[in-house]
Length: 397
Image (tube, rainbow, N blue to C red):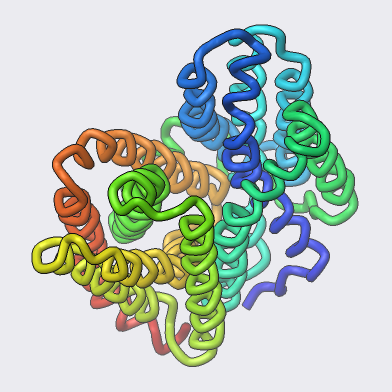
């Protein structure tokens, strides 16, 4: 059993991960204002969300090998420094090109910093303890997106859109300074350095049992991204719900996710991450079956839609932490590369699928529900297979 991660380091890791949702969600309400200031279309500014997701994936692919070879502290601080720099470039942007440049720098830095978090957890904890820490990180991923838009809207009204990025960078500075004192740099790449980075990625990819958890993570996270991408169209445009009620439903999803997240942490005292992962993926399937059935039987009833989405989204409170822990458990070295492979695959796959879902929604919510159910069922089948193969090792977990 490895040493449990100190509480101060846990707070630092949570702070690093919180930057991601704030970077993507806090400025959404400011997009029209940014477009007006730069004299460009709103859609061209909105494109910065997708730019951030793809650039962050690139940052993860860079950061993974770097944190294995250069050490955790130096890599995560480098990532945070780039994130801070990108924020200030955005603040000073006077054209669409400089805005895009700032977002790319910010996203690459964020990706480099984020990918160090699973590696640091894997360095210090394993098994159920690691699963609990990954579950805590998943909680941050769920709570931050519900807070970020309100934070951004408040700052926009009081101080203007520039201050959203100024304060974001200021928070990153605080996190970076804390990291200088809290992040141990004891881990250095111990394998043969003649092994190329490409071969390191190939080794990770060729670990068949671990690959199952990449599929599970990408599929279930894509369900979340599909919901986030289309939720306003579904609730506000299709069902005519008010923006206030829409925000309340978002909070309901978050609250349900927190409950499941804490339940998962409690159940880890008794059950293995593999078993709980299968259970919570099953819960997501149930939610999406309710959603699809509602569209087939009573498509005009928005309450059934809400119920289905709440169950499906809440399940992620138990899925993400366990799938992360299960995947990382296969690697005692090259953990940075492993983390970057998982994170980049999740980001790219979910971004592409979510983008395609905007075309599918034109055929109705039923078609979208079918896509989400297909992804979730795929994850369930893979999870069942992985859980079956993990049975001999669970007694030692």
